[in-house]
Amino acid sequence: MQIRPPISVRRDVSDITKAPEMLGGRVKTLHPAVHGGILARSIPSDQADLEAQSISPISIVVCNLYPFAATISKPDCTLSNAVEEIDIGGVTLLRAAAKNHERVSILSDPADYDQFLVAWRAGNGAIPSALKNTLALKAFEMTATSPGRYRGCLYVTLPFKALAGSPGYINLLDALNAYALVSELQEALQLPAAASFKHVSPAGAAVGIELDETEKIVYGVDDLKEPLTPLACAYARARGADRMSSFGDFIALSAPCDLATAKIISREVSDGIIAPGYSPEALDVLKKKKAGKYCVLEMDPTYVPAKLETRQVYGVSLQQNRNDAKIMPDLFSNIVSSNKDLPKEAVIDLIVATLALKYTQSNSVAYALRGAIIGLGAGQQSRIHCTRLAGGKADNWWLRHHQRVLELPFKKGVKRAEKANAIDLFVGGEELEGGEKEQWESLFETVPSPLTVEERKAHATKLDGVVCSSDAFFPFPDNVHRARKSGVKYLAAPGGSVMDAECIKAADEHGIVFAHTPLRLFHH
Image (tube, rainbow, N blue to C red; front, side, top):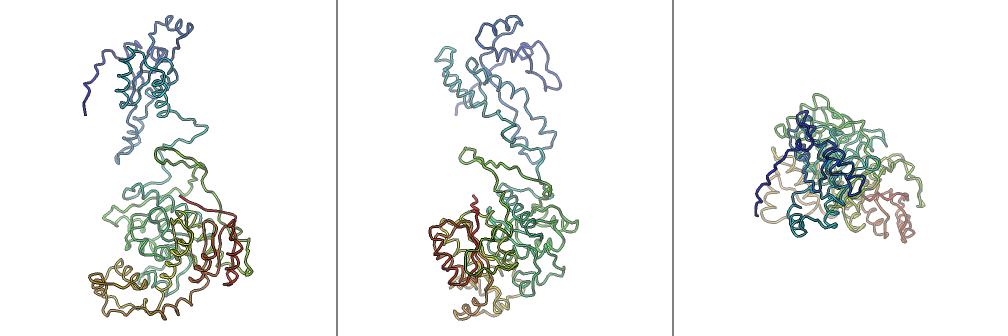
């Protein structure tokens, strides 16, 4: 790359304004001698004004703004550092020159210098109108904003703060989506809620329903001395539903984190947590995780996001209103099946499942029971693959309740993550070979024999009362048939398919309560 020699600046702006810069450089170019020379048009009245004030016209403006974005991205940036990088004069120069681009050329990007010099030399100082227009547009894109129409995308004060660690980009995507989910769960059900997020979809989500003794073993909290609070129960359910997917999760809590919940979190592998507050004891526990690098975010509980959301894809900015649909019990009032018996417990589970879908990459289907997601199929292009994926996870979740799984003879000292992986392989029924088989067998005092087909079938028949919710309509009745295989008794999905009647017929065949909702919940 050829480096151009620096351009020698022979005059200072004060030579034009006849006034020295002041306030430590904050005021230099904001002067009629500068902006009059830029904004003057090639009309007699403007030229007369310039002559009367002894102002020379300016035909080229070259201005690079202060490096505000680079400054605020530094981890040690303070508010005073950021404030000093807010450009006033530079932005004004760009907008003035861009406004008068018929006469004035504006260079706001060093990448444009070469093509400008080529055009300038070819035209003997005259710049083609097309190039002036392009340069003016770039300047406007860099500086223009209409406060009445667009919200600013820069905030000095964020709705959260880091109490420990430093969140990355994906951490924040998970944290903010997860917090929105748990906030809505608590609002809808008046119960503390927790979510385990991975790659912008929930691996688990739950509300604070008390755990029975078997569930404590399944969720790996039976050995905790600390009494389980409702919030701790919510996180145990959210984390424990799909332990393989939750490995390395980002956690969201709807209520201030207490000591019992922090104790569960402290011994699991996760990237961070967001909550509206922390008890001193809980914060002390979490700050010790990852040698002090564990990400702990405190969310402002009064924060209300803007109605308009903006995202950028391939350099193009897209805007739409946030999905502010409320998931409440009346959403499931349109029961289209013959069986219309929808108990309160099922409504709670339907709300949990449907709200989880609201924040899951589409297409998505969720199974829930006892206030928790037990299987979630996310990001599949076909509906039936979502239903199968979620159903398979729900089946594995239920097999973890099998007495033989609860009594697996692990050796002393086997790590929690190793146990979770070993149990997943056991209930999944995979045939292991070679080194994988040897490693798996080495975890046990006595190598367990596989679950037989008969044992699996007998146990599966005991799973009942499960709910299943879909973020869009079922295009074929195969989804209903597959859901029933995983103990589904209650079903919710939007109507609108040409096969609605066949799906309802399938639900009636299995005695399933089927509610048609008027709401699609696509999330991308």
